[in-house]
Amino acid sequence: MLRDAHNRTIRDLRISLTDRCNFRCFYCLPNGEPPLARKETLLSFEEIAYLADIFVSLGIEKIRLTGGEPLIRRDVPKLVEQLANLKPDLRDIALTTNGFDFPRHAENLRKAGVDRVTISLDSLDRDKFKQITGVDALDKVYAAIRAAKQHGFSPVKINAAVIRGHNDDEFVDFARFAREYDIAMRFIEFMPLDSGHEWSRDMVVPGREIFETINAVYPLVPVNKTRGSETAWKYNFADGAHGEIGIIAPVTEMFCGACSRIRLTADGQLRTCLFSTTEHNLRDVLRNGATRDEIIKFIEGVVLKKEPRHYINDAEFVQPARTMSFIGG
Ligand code: SAM
Image (cartoon, rainbow, N blue to C red; front, side, top):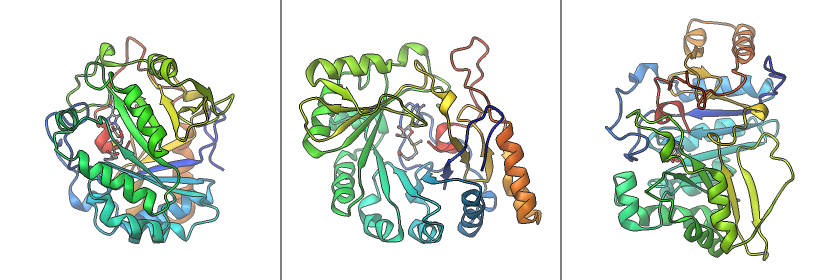
């Protein structure tokens, strides 16, 4: 069991497969990719599978593969097959993707053992989508959503990062989309993790505002009384329509007290928080020939250093040097 110094149990591991991305979302990679990790520093699939086996033996129940854009990495289904060997102790394998390459991998990913997929979609308007992501690919994302449904990923989740002045006029359209296509729609507050360091508080749309805008048109009822270790407050439509709304508000409604997450970057650094300013070099421990027990001790020691909370709202907040695309969203 991995427990931190604040009595939180760590059950959720996010693994970034690559720091590369084929989108150029203005709020993430406005100036293109920062210098990429050298290839030899990236963990191989064998290394990832070995570490995942150790993490699962320590109580990790959910693994989410992310990036960068994870599907840029070749043969992701082969990695998933290895991870699926860790079921049933590993209860859930999830993937976060921008959807661009998803349709051609959907069937193999599903067969290999991915249970759930989250597809990013920041606008339902073709021009706005292009302006936000830098690519004219809205149709490809729709195709990805269709493929996810067709191949039985359930639920199909959509992530929209919300940025004031860019897509804060689309909440009701997204809610209608969720109802029509039976989608679990997630709105995420903009966090200071952009490579351009241009984040500012007035670009953040508070989760409360998102809730109220949707609730005024489509009344919402909470799915649960508490959020548990989930990042999102989840709502059903009061009229019983299909679909679900989730609001992730790390800036205005911090949820660190129940955090159960830890992250492994593509180059093998263990991060205890999205906003950590220090990383822990698990790759070198592994490659320097540590035994399984030594690796376990290292991981347990790192988890004990997990921050009690993030400091976004404190005057002395320092934005991490690594961006969301490197850390893994
Ligand atoms: N490439 C994949 C994708 O697009 O889903 C996975 C990685 S991406 C970093 C994961 C999610 O993080 C996306 O939904 C993206 O919109 C979100 N994201 C990136 N930067 C963000 C930020 N600064 N604040 C909030 N969400 C952000």
